[in-house]
Amino acid sequence: MGAAAAPSRKGAARAPRGAAPATAPTPSADDLFHDGKEPGALRTIGEVSTALGLRQHVLRYWEEQFPMLRPLTRAGGRRYYRPADIALLIQIDRLLHREGYTIRGARQALTRPATRRPRETRVASTAAPLFDGPAPVFEADPAVAPEQALVTALGTLRGRLQSIRDHLASAIARA
Image (cartoon, rainbow, N blue to C red; front, top):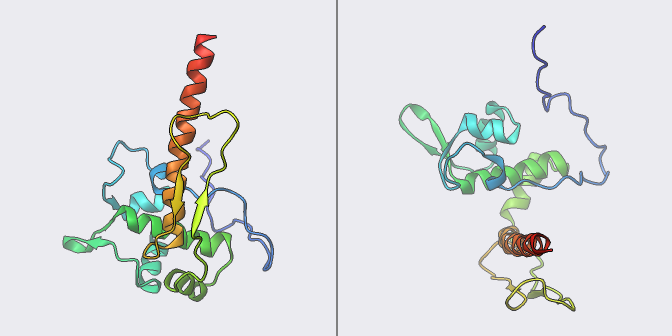
């Protein structure tokens, strides 16, 4: 017999209104593609739709509904998505499919300025430092969206965690 078809989003169950959002982590643009291209490479609509699990016509519709989403278009109308476009698509997908926003609400959430901005977040120190160097301090820049500041902070945290993992791996290897 033939191979089983991949599950689609069409039949996926939705949480009722007012229910807590899904707890699955939101993927970053770097985690979606494993095709040998550079992380900053332009992606076609087919590559992006496959990576995000969305159909191509949905991405085209979102381009109409979200004016800030503007992929590059080349001869023949072929779309090329930049990493910033892919990050925006991930945010739109999260707002619409995980947090239950309407398209209008998601558009407003993406365009309105943040009402609360943290002044400073300091990572708590531990009794025994697990990495060399001072604890990172993240200061919010008023010109940067809170989501972008969070992405930057998480990238720094990811680097620190990889450093800890490497440190532990070398300690285990020596034991």
